[in-house]
Each structure stands twice: as structure tokens, then as C-alpha cells.
Image 1 (cartoon, rainbow, N blue to C red):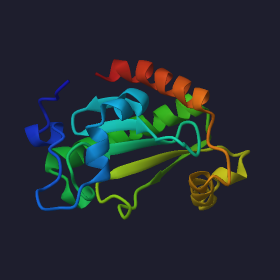
Image 2 (image 1 turned 180 degrees about the vertical axis):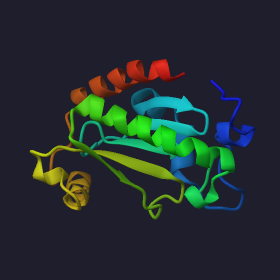
Image 3 (image 1 turned 30 degrees about the vertical axis):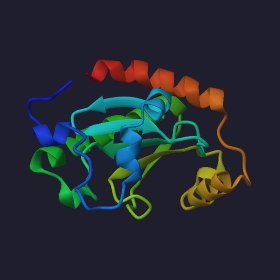
Image 4 (image 1 turned 120 degrees about the vertical axis):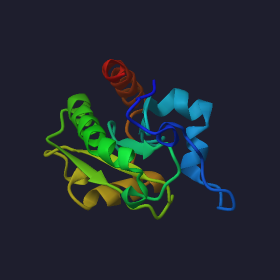
Length: 169
């Protein structure tokens, strides 16, 4: 659904500029299988999705710019105005879905130079999700040293998130 307050460029996944190396996030946004599995919401300039498998934690969501851009410094004015409210809604969604006490918000932009903000549930009783230990957890799951979040739990969480965000449209 489009939002009349946002520019057309902000609402379309406009892809990356020609001449740049292929962007993994842009490719992911066009992957129907990944969308069916992980995507929760496309609204205006944003795409909300669950972390791809293997997911370090159930409820580890990502808020992506649909337009290829490196970070907030590249926002159009309407994207900048919409970012805070969407980030707040998505953070509240993570808390609702997981029951976590806090939600970490992290964006680096080195692995993929396309804005994708990690929304990570911080459970007070799980030391693996504490501060920078969450990066160790991420690497351990990626390398197979630690088990990923259970597939069924992630699927159920994505289904629940889709139902909850349907009211946002």
C-alpha cells in the first residue's frame, strides 16, 4: 500500500545504481522464496523481515530500506521523517513477539552497503544476547558451532508478526 506522504522513489524498491557490484539486500528483496519465508511487511520505503536461516535468535528482525541506500545520511526528507516511527513500531513488535526486556538496534553497513537495521531481542536471562556477546552468538550460529533458533519457532513468529502488522496497512 502506498503512503501519499512519501515520494514515489521511497516507496519503490528502486534497486542499486548501475555500475555497482550486485547488492545482496537488493537481490533478497526480489527473491520470491525468501519473501514467502521471511518477509513480514512491505510498507512505504521499508521492508521488515526475519533474519534469514540459520537465525541466531527467534525474533531477530531486520528493517531494510527498500530503495538502495547506504544509510540515514542518504535518506530523502520523507524517508527521514518516516524512519523513527517505523523503527519504534518494529522495535515494539519485537518485544511483543518475544517478550524480551530490550531490543538492540544495530546497523553497520559493511557486509552489505544497503541500509538494513538489525532489531535483536535482548532477553535478560540469556547471557548470549547481552551487549556485544550477541555478535559472538551470530558468528557461532553462522559457523555451525551453536544451534540456530528452532525453525518451527521462527516460522510461527513470522506468521504472528504478519498478522500483527496487517493492521499497520
